[in-house]
Image (cartoon, rainbow, N blue to C red; front, side, top):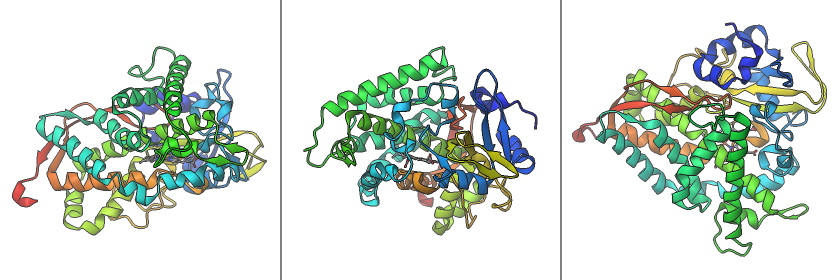
Length: 409
Ligand code: HEM
C-alpha cells in the first residue's frame, strides 16, 4: 500500500481510502513509523500494533495527554487552555480531580434513568426508516447521542441540531458539508459558538442547584485549587459533547452495514440472546469509532529499536490495533461469537471512555429493537464518509428496512 506521510493528516484520504490495507502494512513492516508530513508541520510517530497502541494509551508516565489528544491539533493551533483543565488533556493525578466526580454523572444508575429515552429514540429511528422506502439513516443517528447527552446536560432540545453541526465542524473541518471554506476558520467558529453557548448555560446554574444536571454537577465540583472555574466547566462540557456525538453514530451506521452483509449472523443473535453481548463487542471492534489518538512522550522511550525522544508526538491508531492479527484470530472477519474480544474502541487506562457504559446501553437497546422489528437491512444507495482522520463516520447512508412479520415477534 503506497501513501505519503501527509496523507495521514489528510481527511479526504481517510474518507476515500481503505485504511486497513495501509495499517496492515505498517503493523507488519514498520511498527514504529516516523511520519514527516511536511508543510511546516511537526513530524510524529505512528504506532499500529495492539500492544503498542495499548502502551501509548495506558502508560501516562511515558506518554502524556497534556498537549492534546486529537491528531488535528498538529496542523491547527493547540488550545493550550485545555491542558490540565479539560479532563481529556490531563494526566494522573490531576486527571482524577476531574474524572472521579464526573464518573458519578455517568454511572450505571444514572444511565438506567435514560433507558426509556434510548428505547423511544431507537423505536422512532427504526419506524422512520420502516415508513420510508429508502431512508438516509446517517443524520438521524447523529441526533441519537445528542438527545441523551442533551438531556443529561440539561440542554434545550431546540439547540441540539445546531450543536451536532458545530461538533461536526470541529472534527470534520475539511469536509465540504461542514467546512466554512477554511479549516482553521471552521474550527475557530465552531469552538467560539460552542463556548458562547455553554457560557449561557453556565450562567443559568448555581452551585446550590438541587438535583443538578451534568453541567450543574461540574459547577459544584471542587478541584485542588478550589471550585471548578467557568472556563473549566465550559471545556469539560465541550469534551463531553464531542466525545458522545462523534462516536456513537458511527457504531450505529456500521451496524447497518454488517446487518446487510451478514444477515445469517444476526439471525443467530436473534435466536440466541446470549450472543448479544459478544455481538456488541464485535461491532465496537469492527467500527472502531475513534480512529487515532495522540500523546506526547514524557521521556525518551525505546520501541522497536528506535528512540522516541521526550516531547515528540505519538499517534496511536485504534482502528489498526483492532485488526491486529497478533491479537485477533481472523481479524478481517466480522464474527458475532468472537470471545475474548480485547478491542480498544473505548481506549485503555486512565482515559478509558467515561461514556462507555452509556454508549453500550444505547447500542444494546438499539440492537434489541432492530432485531425485534426489522427482518433485513439493505444498503440502498451511495454511502458517503465524513472527511476526518479522527473518526471514520458516515454522513450519508441510505437504507431499506424490511419489517419483521408481527407473528414472528
Ligand atoms: C461508541 C461510542 C464511544 C466510543 C467508541 C468512544 C471512544 C472513546 C475513547 C477511545 C476514549 C479515550 C480517549 C483517550 O484515551 O484520550 C474516550 C474518552 C472519552 N469519551 Fe468516549 N466514546 C464513546 C462514547 C462516549 C459518550 C457517549 C460520551 C459522553 C458521555 C463520551 C465521552 C468521552 C469523554 C469525556 C472522554 C475523555 C475521558 C477522559 O479523558 O478521562 N464518549 N472515548
